[in-house]
Image (cartoon, rainbow, N blue to C red; front, side, top):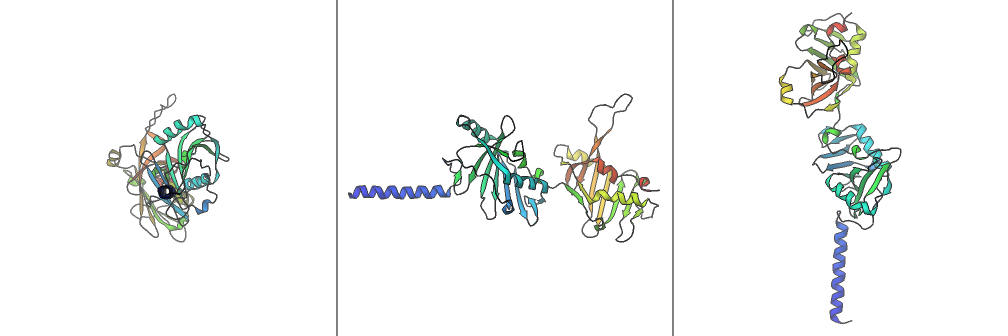
Length: 335
């Protein structure tokens, strides 16, 4: 072998080694062989889900002890976390995408998709799901798998889940509001709640305070602190909604400033035995439905929902089947 040929062989070997090294380090390289091992066999090892979408939404869902948080600020919805983990475990390939349809599917996914980075400890994800749109029959979801250190699959697959028929993308929303826990009040042990003040704004004669003493029965008081006669069972029942009260959804559409400028219809203040008081302000929601039946007046207020300001700044919608019990006038609790 002459000297020039030997040098050429060495150069090609070095370049080949560099190319292999770069391929191993790149997580965005497209693989010729498709990846199909989407499932995570042991979800107890999952410590983090970092979810983004093409609209710019970001949700960083992390395990912290026996609970999960979102974006390091709020408690996450535990049922949604459980549903996501169940999907990681039971996801399965329904069928490959026909070669003729792959370009269209990949183009659509490039414009509207959700990226889910799955962490099983450590600083790098073990798997990355690219979740696309639904199939035409809505029985499957187009997805692509990427494995850091190996690369991204060259082909999308139609994915489903054992025991489930439908689309998988709603199980991994990227918006923070979707993951945020809806808890407003949570006193599973009512003895942790020392006092509840119910202010029917504009009706001071109907307002009252329930003093939940550590021992013995609660007391019904006027706002001034004067004891009032009470039906013990009704007063104890008035405390039950505070064991766990959740909002229905966060309202980002209602003009916030105009609503907050109006006086609330009710103000509830809860004083725990330890910690700071919690306040919820309530406003009736205008009725936008159809008129009542024959000789029935059109309702002024929505009979199902109300606006509420919770956690000082968060505007939410709550259900009246609970708030009506929490805001009943004092006469409803008296014999």
